[in-house]
Length: 358
Image 1 (tube, rainbow, N blue to C red):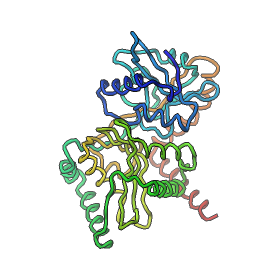
Image 2 (image 1 turned 180 degrees about the vertical axis):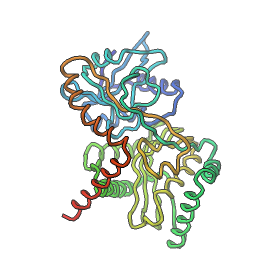
Image 3 (image 1 turned 90 degrees about the vertical axis):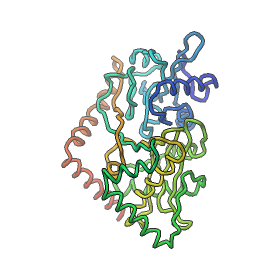
Image 4 (image 1 turned 60 degrees about the vertical axis):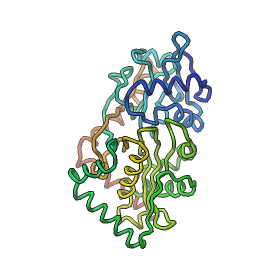
């Protein structure tokens, strides 16, 4: 095994990584491609990749970020929607031995993909990640929505028509918008949404903003940035930025202009994204971990992701466990009690409103 910076991976290793993902047979999630790891490394210089070689062939890859005191995290921890190792079938290194070889006392993950046997038993929680299956085409998906969510679909399409009448029919959708100004608008909307809801503003972190800009410019077979925008005339009213492979669109950052909220532009946008994705040969939209009413209305099924950590025995591992476990237990306690969680959200929203009046 060798440990390298992602930018130091050879072309042979990158091709082997891609081939291993194809052979794995699961969804081709773009977050698991080498291009995503290399993009993260440009803004997170502590990023590394452990590479296994056998019989003069690269057979496994483990991307991670290494922090102080042996603290390791999944690549893009906090924003990546799919994490884990990329290994040849049958390759099963011990998780703690892997951490030792990487110089880590702990490795934390918050969106470990399903089917990662190396980290079996390390997950503390599992989460549903809603998905939209458009493998049979958009018409089949819309027919399914008419059966399972008839009121939702009827209302959303009616609002789209009302929006068209208000704009004299000049409503248009761009699936893959290359204008960086539209991306700036999306990030401004998203930052405002984070503040309104009392959540930490991800786009206040320079590394996340830099990562999204780099990914917007990225064009690779397994990982390309896709900015989708709904316009009224030349004015954007809803937008989404995500990553796509040949068959999967990972939904990431959606937002809309609050002035048009009565038309539900975010929902209209997602329907048009599903339609365009199906036309482009994409079979699945992954809406990402997290409960949301719009996801329940749009989804056709769910995948599963996991949160947890591998901890090596020793003083540093114990230190990380003590730092991490108590707040996680509090979060789990709140999440499993809907009434308490609702009061917590209400408190966050009230705090955000108070900050906004200062």
